[in-house]
Length: 130
Image 1: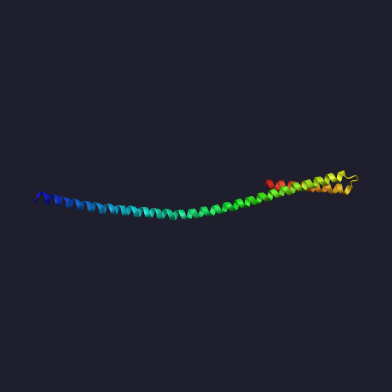
Image 2: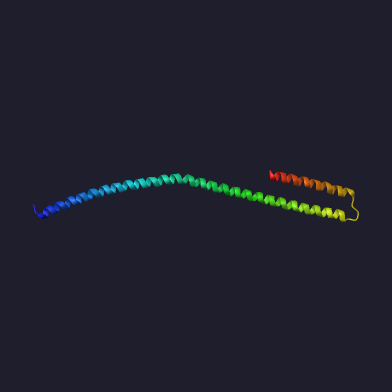
């Protein structure tokens, strides 16, 4: 056996060892990739319901915001109507006293109207407070 034969045998043994190491490394890499694939699949299955819940929650928030805006507009309209009624009553009140001859029934009607308005205001505040 010559030196060349010995080196050739060593080279073949090294190539076989390298092939075995390569096969083991590829197997480990394949297992790691399978594990990563399973983790990603589990993660996606867990996040889909969360995203659905988040979508439902955002829709509910939009509905609540729209309802709040409607209530605010209704409240603003009520205050505006109340203000208009007060101006109207004030104009009626000044007109009843500015006429040369005030009839008592007009004054009594005004007093009844003011009394009704004050009761309405108190009822409104009670309802508003709670």
